[in-house]
Image (tube, rainbow, N blue to C red; front, side, top):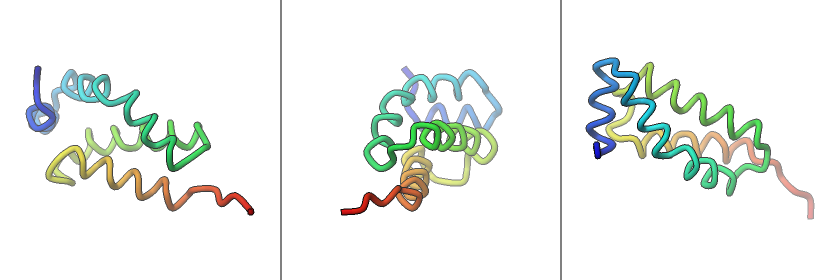
Length: 85
């Protein structure tokens, strides 16, 4: 099994299979994590698409995959619907 670092290094070499492996590894976990900060499922799916698009297009943007996740969480949190009390 490849580590996240191995997969990011392969993605830097334009290995689309590595991106698929990273997606398969995190798809369900990320959805559940993002669901904690955002109720709009369409927005969550859009954020996940953008996250993996950024990994593919800019694999060196963050030093590790967690950086991509944190960036996406911040974006979702800023778009969170405020529930009136």
